[in-house]
Image: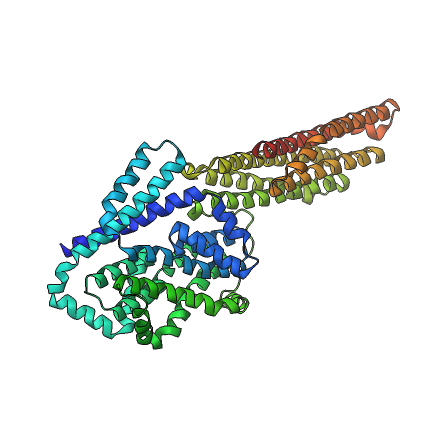
Length: 534
């Protein structure tokens, strides 16, 4: 019965925390990302942001995993995350302080109220509040199950001897707490169990303090696992999380008994004492390491160097399947990948005019190969977006996803026009040994420059979500149409004048103008999608 109560209680506690955390995170929406990425210039604001976000989602591991995703996607740099990591350590104490209140007698009431709001609420906000209340109700119900189930342990001499030995060996307590937290992927669950055992008079305060210290180290296992396979910058986030915790435990290890005695004087209730120990430890390591963040960043960068490996063009760089349950983060990663795709397309367009000028066969084939890269990224980004959890996606994020899909589709079409049309025209020109007239080449070059400028403006408008710049792209449509008509008339005038060089390249010349104008149409579609999103 004791084992059933223990495992059942821990399972309820973990599920309740997850349920409440998901609801609060969904209610906060993309503001979590803004909070994390927007307050990193000032180290104190970064600590505040980390503490706030972790208090909302109730998991420092989840916050660290978000940071790993942001850094891996290039949305943040590693040094910017250090203040947030320290803040996350403070924010995680909120859940433990809440558990220490042990309002277990009200757990059924909270479960009932949360259930009613989830199933009878009509608005999403009401349902999210209901899910949060339901989660906290299950959390306290699990705690009550552990407390009630542990009562028989008082009569078990073997269990009491084991716990007594734990109190006499701080290292064993730290290892036990670390192992427990790593196994259940939650320091709060391990500390909640310690609070329950201490409240039942089974676990001494000194033993509970060692479990608290070990739990803080064990919770880093989740972030470490999340960083596997990520780039060096993302791995540094996980290493920093571990380093702060481990160094903190090493610093306090010789003073565990005086620390436990001091904690005992802060409250009469054993649960509050343990929660206070957790809070003091995390606030303490934040205060100790905060002045040395720049040194810590350099030390960890030296410890985790960049891996010297060749760039593989047919590989996604930013999207990470582990971010699919966080739509804001996943869309940020997909956007970075799409902008990388845009860089490839811009490079193809830039080199197109060089091919027509120089008849460079090697460059022509290189431009065609780059379209395979564009097609690969188009497919991978769309497959990634198709796996997003849309039930947790806000309307704003849904609009961003539509605009992103529009951008990807139009970029892929531009790449196809360059590969299958413009490069085929260039190949025909080389094969037939034809040469544009001096005036004709100058006109094509000028029109190409106008289209390229429009492409650049549209992509800048997308990257900055700039409505004004997108409108400028749309406003250039009449100018581009007028310029294209003027260039056709100019070419026809040369034909009427009997210019031999214009006559032999006439079909190629006019088709180049047509395809550049087709590219302009896709650029316009990108601008329209930006305006619709805003």
